[in-house]
Length: 347
Image (cartoon, rainbow, N blue to C red; front, side, top):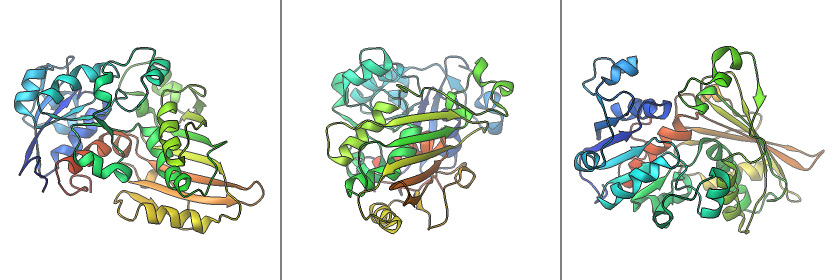
């Protein structure tokens, strides 16, 4: 047990009315070492959680208006499921008041304030807090997460792309140049909102790319890949697609193999890197990742095939965008911060 907290901890979910908030509720309600003491939503303040999410009907918990003082008084940890820019408004005072903050937004993922301005069209709201924030990739930064006051959870697409690529770049098995990721996401990735491009008749029986140049997840992906490769910059093509499923992300990634590298070496690098990673599944030869096998779980499946014709390796990666891509990874980070079993509430 960590010295951060003994026994059950009290959790607040700030901005709990979206899909990530609903997923956090699902996971934390079944976590034996967590009591949910506060769920906030300006829109639904005063209403029972079961009114908004009928699956939780009968649970004695109401939405409340977000109050930093009330959150700080009642909670040991606050999950921020808020839009970028808004998260920082809560993160700064909550960290100052001694609350551990697990942020699902993009506010603290990028180390560069210049990149934040370029991709989010606003000055970074809390550059002084960037130095304290730990990028919450549990498979790579567990020791730093243990002592973090503020954890910046990775984005969903970046999780699906960096998990297969980082060990290969670190081991020098692939080139850091010319990487392409064609990724597909279910409609819940767009958030819980009524917006014409995302209503059923517009999405069903349809697959379409979007944000093929300058997507906001691109600098986060490139930041992590550059660090793994030990270079200043990495430039990739990231091509996201919207597909007619509720949840799930699949990324097909193409990278140039270094001379003589085999598929067995790729899998060996993964197995070595993720030997102690409970939520990464390295698939055997002949299998590729499938979103249906990770839906409603915190797992990431990774697989590969090598192409002698082109000298490329094709990587296949699947996660649930709302679990491993958001709320599940947030709970995994919380478990590490508070010294719980990393898998608690997630199996």
